[in-house]
Image 1 (cartoon, helix red, strand yellow):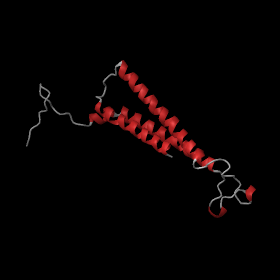
Image 2: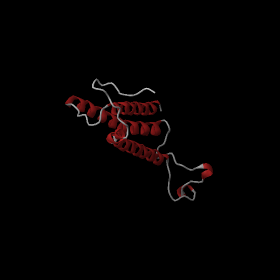
Image 3: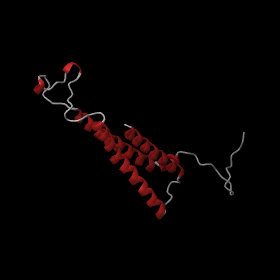
Length: 148
C-alpha cells in the first residue's frame, strides 16, 4: 500500500511541476535543442510512471496484500452473488481478480484523460493569454498605470 500511495504522490508532484512551468513560459517561444531533450525525457518519465509503475503497483498490492486472486470468489452479503456451481443463482462466477483488473483499466483511463486534458490545456495557453488585457509599458519597460 505504501508503494502504491507513494507512486500517486510522485505523479502529483511531476504534474504539479508542469503547470507553473507552462504558465511562466511565453506563448510561441521556440525551444532550444537542450530544452526539448530535457522536456522529452521528463514527459517520457511521467508517462512511464503513470502507465507503467502506478498500475503495476496497484496489481501487486491487490494481488498480494489484499488477496484479490482468482481463487477468492465474490459471494456478496448473505451469499447473494453465489455462483450456480456453488449452489447459488448467479450464472457468472465472480472473483476479486475481475475487480482488480477493472480498477487497473480505470487507472489507465484516468491517466489517458488527464494526459489529453493537460495537452489541451497547454495548447490553449495562447487563447487564455489573448483574453488578458495587455499592460501598456513605457520605453523603459515600466507599466504606465495611473494611480487613482
